Length: 557
Ligand code: C2E
Ligand code: CA
Ligand code: CA
Figure (cartoon, rainbow, N blue to C red):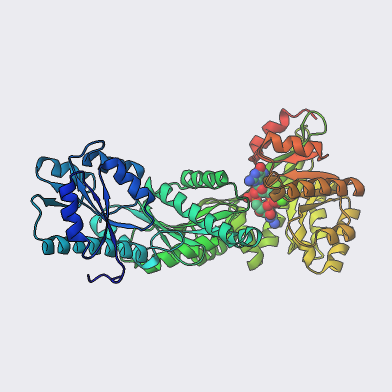
């Protein structure tokens, strides 16, 4: 045999009821193999499932009592028993097709051929089969059994050659937090998670006509027909992970959806991986498409930065208001947060999560914030003039705004200009601001507070400076970071922290706000903990000025 594993003596199972045939086959085969005999199909199945030594080949008769050869083949298929090459002994050609369909790979006819011919045939079949197993194994990642990178690339090429007109996506999926699973539960559990994810991926991807491969570490490769909207696919995958029940495990998906066959598969993989690594930097999404950011990442930023001043002049920045509800009794709108939106002429609505960090970096944020503040304060004046209920508005203050002493004068100039009492203006200062020069910061915030503005600590708990900030900054409102609400039920600790923050707020006698509240369960739990103000989709998304006014009109405070 030319097979790499030559020296072991393999076992052949003969399933045949006629003693004479049993004897002949035994005689011929035992020169090179161990031979096991079964008198019918039932015995055959038993031998297969109980044999200590692996069976390398089966020689099967068709006509047998108890369970015939065809039944035996069917049973093997049903039972999903590991594939073993099967040679069928036959004298009639009509059953041959059925046998082939049921998995037989060759036939021998009676009377039996010369012993050397039979031995050569058997050896050849075992060799072919074992080679195939070895190829199968070397094609795959040992742990997860998905294709390794090189084989994946070859298959991608092949699929593209055969289907040149199909639009395909090449994606990279990263399994996050695997190291935590590893630390908490050990290597075996981490391996199990990877296997589970690989299997789920295969199942998911099958529906889209695709293949799965392994890149390095915790990265998987996926190639399938183009998907316009990944929300559903991602949701589906999220649910299957939830079902598995390992908390903390998460994933990110980078989608390379550009159908340009000239771009090498290697480059496409790199771009998908790059995109995958960007997921989360632009919000809480689980997936991101290459065209959305990566390829034009710097280009997009350059364009946005280039457009800024024009856009500001053209009033493309508009203010949305998200109401905050007091829930101590019957819920009512007690204030609102001003959130800026960019209605870009060619890009549509651009999220502040993209342009705020950019403007902070490029030094435009002060100009933008001053514009937002003035617009929001002007709107308060408008409400007052029109005898509408006026509720305080919270303005976001970037940490860069706070480096500048003139912030106090600027804010006051707006409230004076529009005759709005400072007490209607809340300033949301994100907790991470306290990392920078705190003495200076404390001085400015103290002055702002003295002037009657209300100080609100935003995203509390998200940074590392939380407790430090509480001790040194004078403030009126504490706003819990929305991640705590989102992950409220993911573990007991989160719930404890939410409760603890409520105790802190009570102790300091400040108003406590929770944002990102989307469900009635979250609302009830927070209410139980003593959170008095709630902001989130449960009550309302951020609204345009007009819609917000409409809602205010219905407000019963
Ligand atoms: P933030 O200050 O933490 O604002 C809350 C964000 O959460 C808003 O996102 C809001 O739309 C979103 N949100 C509200 N309720 C829910 C909810 O129930 N579920 C979920 N998933 N999200 C909810 P948005 O408007 O995209 O703003 C993102 C961030 O951009 C803000 O986070 C804030 O840091 C910044 N930002 C927005 N407007 C301004 C501004 O005028 N100036 C400055 N400096 N930053 C701003
Ligand atoms: Ca805020
Ligand atoms: Ca916030």
